[in-house]
Amino acid sequence: MDSEKITQVPDTYIANTGKVAWRIVDGEGVIVHVDSSAYYGLNASGTCIWEAILTTPLTTEAIATHVSARYGLAREAALRDVEAFLVTLGGEGLLVRAEGAAGVRSDRTRASSGESQGAGAYEPPALIRFGELEQLVLSGE
Image 1 (cartoon, rainbow, N blue to C red):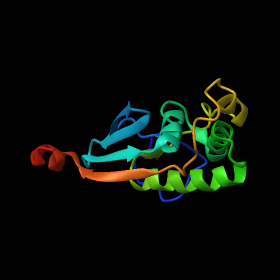
Image 2: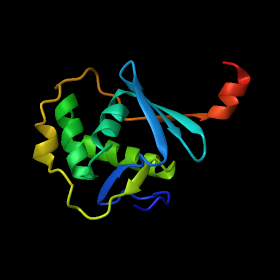
Image 3: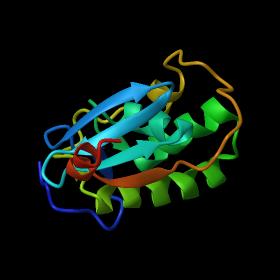
């Protein structure tokens, strides 16, 4: 997989799990980039997307369908938000281009996977950069 930063949404993408550590805390994702030591927070819809791209390459359309179904959002609105979010993830080195499309799940596969529908009020997915982990540790916070 290519580890260059992404500035446009590729056809298929996957979380850069070789360069990040992550956890879900109280329903929201926390990510640390190993190389830069930058740490990030994800809101609920960002966490929904992050969990979807952790192990299998997905298309933008598949993610938008999943977000639309989960939050009861118009697909076109979900697609715009998903595209912007993926560009943000890629710009931070948290997303990589997927090699080939063999593992790409279809829209139907992801949307009908049995996940909870109507998962609370929708907010556009957001990635918040908090700084570098070393600064947090040294500050004693």
